[in-house]
Length: 277
Image 1 (cartoon, rainbow, N blue to C red):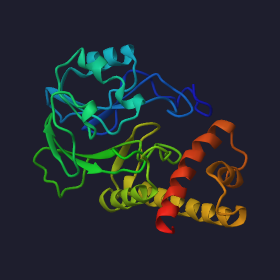
Image 2 (image 1 turned 180 degrees about the vertical axis):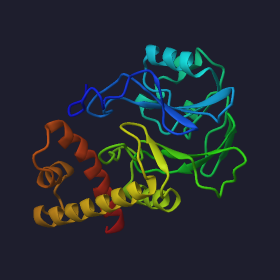
Image 3 (image 1 turned 90 degrees about the vertical axis):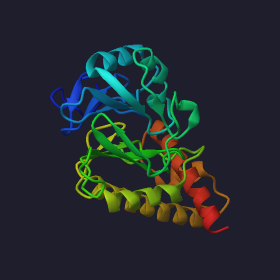
Image 4 (image 1 turned 120 degrees about the horizontal axis):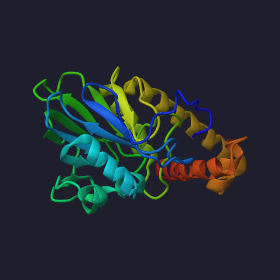
């Protein structure tokens, strides 16, 4: 059990927890400092639909794949929000139970289907789903606006599936390999404009009550952190590396979290060097 969660608050593993009338979550039993309680596999379907859409099959965990297959019934489509293994390593395990195609931004994760692109309109399980490119956490990160089919894409979304672009608690890490701070800030601005008042379903942690508001807060938090990095660099010298700057800014955090924060600092320094060469 994750620290700070009482037995009443702690969500049940490997059961379908309804979130909205169109969406629910199956929580994988893979808790860690990075995944919180575990990875949220999202199940989407319109009321009365005989099929569903599964988003993020989860890690390399056969028991989780078996539970998904047992719980959800016929799977029409599998979607992937981004490339990290705790969301994608279970793709082929789940495919042992279903012939459903798999779509992701990166072609290597696709099975019998084309890659996702920004503003794609996906129609499955009685739903209309719009793919929103929201890079920053990783280059391939997407969010998914979910509506009942035929309600019109100008109507408010029922929910937004967020992957790791916005987490249920704390701010996400910007991956030091292909994360990008400029992209992340643009993604926060995009979600703030599109998802005010819309519930968000993150890849980890509890539901996000207001996605648009969360995006505003997280975007400002990252801009404030950037100001701290600029100030630290001015004090320590332009040659100060990400480790030194991170240690200067982050106080009273565990060594593990310090290394995690260092990833985002590296990404911020790349952004500053590109902006102010």
